[in-house]
Image 1 (cartoon, rainbow, N blue to C red):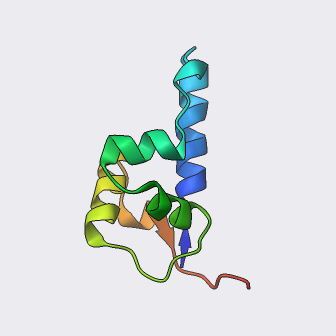
Image 2: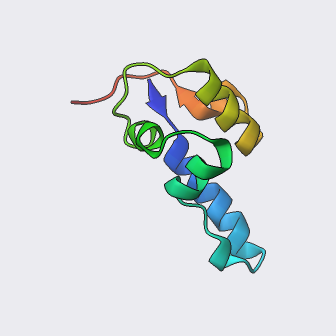
Length: 80
């Protein structure tokens, strides 16, 4: 399973840049604060270094990015 968190963060930052707000750039730390999730948890998702994910974390991320679970995760093999 692959987490698309890097793509979602990049998409958010692109929208902010296009809106003339590049100083409001979304970082993993800012996201962790916004959704009240540990930065280590987000870092593991970001780097696809996870074996399981808490349902509350998935829900918070989907709500934040206004997306579905299928937009956040994609089923495919992670190459070692």
